[in-house]
Amino acid sequence: MSIFSKFKTLFHATDDTKIPVPALFATRSDTIYAPISGMLVSRKEINDEVIAEGMLGEGYGILPVGNIIYAPASGRVDMTTVTNHSIGLLASNGAKVIIHAGIGTVAMDGKGFTRYVEMGDTVTAGQPLLSFDIAAIKEAGYDEIVTCVISNPQSLEEVHLVGSSNTLLGGRPLVKVGDPLMVTE
Image (cartoon, rainbow, N blue to C red; front, side, top):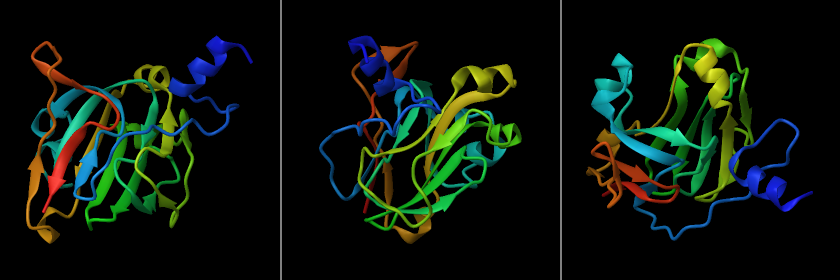
């Protein structure tokens, strides 16, 4: 395998590749980290009424750069979908985190999505959870934004939205995998 091929597999998983290399970053048990790199979008700006109105919980959207979603915290996989477009994680701090690749992508019936973990698996922050084909999502007419929300904020004392960056694009923060998004109490 050429050096270019090795580098490419770090950022773009395909059906014929092995599980991507984990992302390494320092973690704290009270923090939920960015599961993918990209441009941060407030929950209210996401083009899905259920998410925008907070019916799924508190969090952010990320317009992705790359196609691999990593565990935003250590914990246990407590929800998977047969279409592999969404995954739920019960973080070690009690936060239930839902990560959803794309808006409306459930209608793609799994085409373009690969999951690397199973229900009940214990994962560590930075472990690859799933990958998706951005081109397939766009071709199907859907928005490729990745959402990351805490679905049980009422079970936690507080959820602080702390996603930010010193690097802005069009006035929006750019985040990388492992940047803090939410701190729980």
